[in-house]
Length: 189
Image (cartoon, rainbow, N blue to C red; front, top):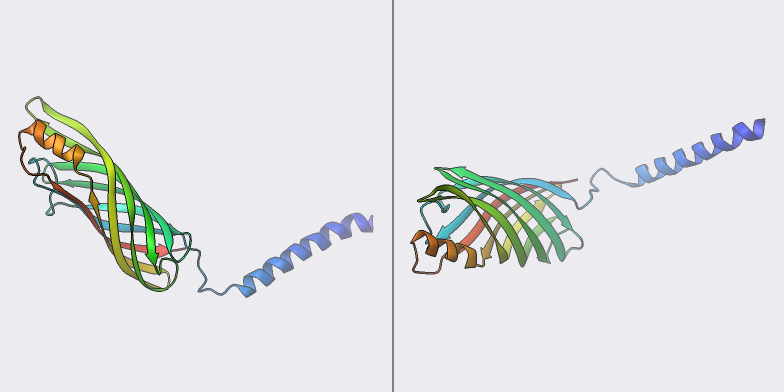
């Protein structure tokens, strides 16, 4: 009877002591590299139809970021711009290559991005929702202090879907420059 009770108690004590040793070895300044954050975001399509957002229209983004190493990371942004009759909802996924991505201090990065978004279009037949997606190239910089990271980033996007919509709306002419820019703040858990 003593062996039946003694073995589970010893096993639990061993597990508890190993967890305490691990907790004592880990300082409170150690974080994982997973980050969650919020950002002020603009989508600038210039030149563009009147219902396209411009640099004057600011929205909000929620994002998650995970640096796999100090030189490679990935980020996923979900954004919403709803201002002055312009309505955009979308997401962008980014692959980040650079320096300082997982350590405190200065960070600099660049890499490919892919987006998908819905924009409410105003036409002669009323309001419709247009879907826009494609590739882009993003660049960013920032600073990480403890668990908080501040970044400024921008993605230059392929203009094909936006140019086609400009033609349909009668705003044909120059190719639009399409930028998604964000001022980001995140917390590292």
